[in-house]
Length: 193
Image (cartoon, rainbow, N blue to C red):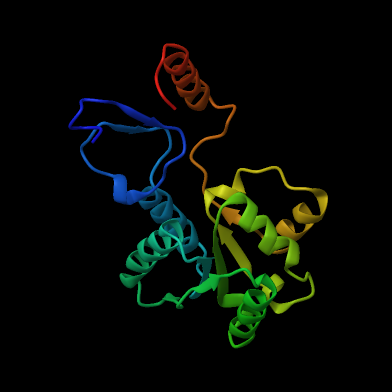
């Protein structure tokens, strides 16, 4: 519709790689494809990690990110990416499932990859017991939680689980401020949000 009507669509936050095509969508953030590959590269830089347990919601974002990670690690036979734990409304059950999987693994060689938005990631981390086996393995996360301010309790947990991830920009970067100003001017001049 946008291309057919010669419109320009600007998005400050859409990351879906399914929207990566030659059209009139201008995104101000990189796609899941680039972010997932960057995260996979980061995970690969940890030579002791050979077992990855993804945890995500059953959404386009979660499934797509997990698929990209799986494709990336297909090339590396020494790293096993398990079937994901799908986040449901029963977070405690999801964490029990994670605890079972982690308990069956070599803790020093296992990593959890949390793929969720800020709210969902905080919900998972807030309910993760610091004494659990799941809190004894390396955690990686998508940009949604890496870029946020954590309260002191979550900061302690993030340090304990050595939470790592990738980020492509911060809200105070020149890049972000520049494109935020462009968006604001377009809106002021009658562009639709």
